[in-house]
Image (cartoon, rainbow, N blue to C red):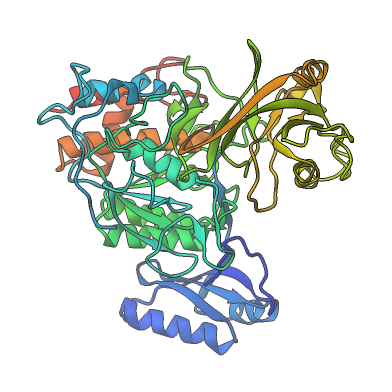
Length: 539
């Protein structure tokens, strides 16, 4: 198996290819599949997946092997195994029924979810209300963080299609590294449990967040690597696995610019087998404003675009005639990898400065005299007069000089207990920076150019710097919007399990709140998904 998911050409020169064969009426699907595998192996190729119902397989082929296979009369077509990428990352536990209305995020309220299962706003799931209970939703994404309390009770099983095992965490065994938390974020939007919070920022709801369908069970299919990239062949195989595990909904917060006949047939087959596929319209709206990405653009898939909390179209959200619905997709608060996000503060007397903790910054709270260490380029950059008892270092970023990790190492060696990085791009605010190298590091935060200049004047005075790791983050993209729609579909289906996928689709369409022209339009589809309105249309 490909451990990174995004590999284009292997070291042996083989490339990933999707192979479609001509159906043979007098031969069983299983026998035909064995013959197809033998045909690929005969030319020297390596088979990855086989799909008897689709009369197809995925293989690794050298150029000459591909040419030889193309000459076979049994081969209908050879298609590229298109890349996909994220659009923006245990046994069943006991569900928690009580929490706090503070867990109901802006986006959750916008789509009417709390009105379905907590009509009286008391922070408790209403008895008998639809919550997604009894329904399995398959999240086809980058995996999950099994340590996060928001998801532990929702997890119903998983599979890693990159490493071919049942450990579906957002983690690379080969690289010994966690991913970006994309899959965890969308999974929690969909089904985070009420009252199951992790570590939050100061002033935020201690219970964390709750998902659209807080009773739904989640199947986790990892098809994206830690960089958020993958292959359509893994997506097809994941669809088959999800169906076999009893999923009624497949939620795909991923997109590809590349269409393919085999992929189209795979989603058609999933729909005919009773599974509704919901996918992101894509985040390339600035470059491709009038086209929907794949698989969202296929007729058998419900395509989802993104709007802000005012219902305004977001320019990155791809539009087109295939668009079905929209949902919130801007600065959506949800769970992320445990401790992967952080918050920070910088205080000088009564003054507070906006700051941003660097990725990989250590946690901590330090107070000391502020020392201007310039560019932090050497072991003496803080000067001979730097306090020996520890201090707070102010360092200019200057993107043309040393890496930030080197700068921080220099000032820490001189006695810095915490570091403030002054951004050198005035229009970039606090910026978003990383230390890029493993720690341990002290608290390291960045401030804007203007704030950094103001702090420079305060050199010698006492400054406090704090950085705290948290388990929640805000993300933006059609990925987030997709999870909202998948969650609403779960609510509707759990209220009426006898519905077909197209009946659920139709209910979501008819109940959507129009945001643009009357009826359907390319920018908003049928409108903003609405949970309570959809349930009110049930017969």
